[in-house]
Amino acid sequence: MSRHGPHHLVIFDAGGTLLMTRAINRRKQISAISPLPDDKVRRYVHERVLTLTRQQFTPGRIGAFAAELGIPASEFPYRPDLPAEEYVVDPTAPAVVAAVARYARIAVCSNVSAFDADVMEGTLRAWLPDVDKPGSTDELGS
Image (cartoon, rainbow, N blue to C red; front, side, top):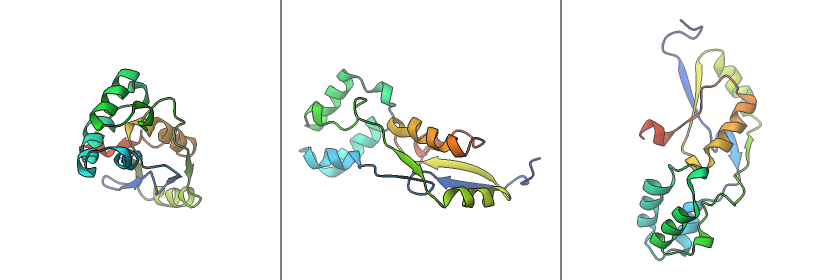
């Protein structure tokens, strides 16, 4: 049994809690230029786009997505040629996580897209090397 007992687990959200970013909401970028209603864009992006990793965005796939959304492929914001999001650790996060870790096991979860997950994970690993791989809400089925 761990030092925390059998049922002590604290889950932290990564984006906007432990990590800060100046991320532009890509779905909102699409909604701003797509002729489709916002709810259709939101559903499309959630169901078809957010689960793909950066490497899975091929020119053909980008072209197909853009065509279905009614936007130019050059304006599609999920493109590997665009710079990755930059995440920085919130200045208060290390002390808070360290204090909580004395009493409970720590897990990190995020609703960040798979497109940005590797960058977020790398930032977390730099100061939380013992945390299990950060999970996404999509992986958890929520």
